[in-house]
Length: 112
Image (cartoon, rainbow, N blue to C red):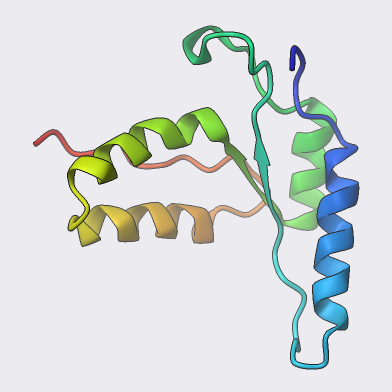
């Protein structure tokens, strides 16, 4: 609630990836995406980095993407008003897919 997302969150992520990979129909392990809402009782604009240094290091080691949930708010708000903006949806998905071992940098919603 009042701290950054620490390394312990990766334990659950790794467990989920391992369980998924055990299924017969899965040939490759999934790439992890860790959503974090660090310092959730602090205004998003006033939050320090939401992932600890160890989390950032471990994301690089595993090739996981990190997503700050507060970064999703402007995206969701825009898409509620512009649900047919397929180009922006694609740009957001591409940002996630292309981020390996770092915090996802989403595009800014277009001004319409």
